[in-house]
Length: 247
Image (cartoon, rainbow, N blue to C red; front, side, top):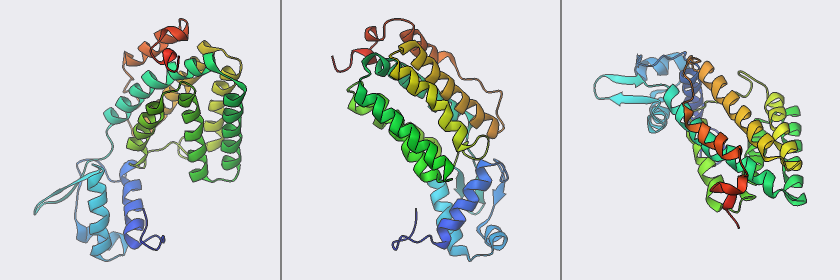
């Protein structure tokens, strides 16, 4: 978010710095801070710090206690786990269904999105990379004729990325992420629903594991909810709920 002119404000900079310090664990959950102390540390006036703290509180990264200051809440491992369990439930059978219905137009869109991800990685353009990543996932959902699926997945992704939690250039490069998508694209192109589901599952589980490790919770496992998606892809995808969309 930036100011009305489109330029980043002092509050934007403070928000970005504090969010990064919370996400990386530099500001540990439970730690108490004050507007005055943060203002001194960052070398800015108290006004942009207050504005940034309000935004952080809206995201649940801090809480503000009257007369007691700011308490760092951090990003909960449970939130990351919950989001990825839901994504597994949705996107694994969606990948299988897309492979079942793959036509030349879908394959072209997927390969164009993957090529754009690779180009953005080469250019170190993380905003463009994320946009094309989402386009690839959205194309899989659109192949099922389910207009709500991509929106639900986008909101799940937003709920994590709004907190500044990302593996990009922290635990893996954009190029590595792009190449994780290649087996998904090729499985869909080959009209192989089992391979498409497996590749999507591997990509999502790896992302979740890296995020949890990044947050210092590498031992927190994903629960077995995702097995529902796996089971639905071990049979004819047309038998699943997502597989029947658009028929």
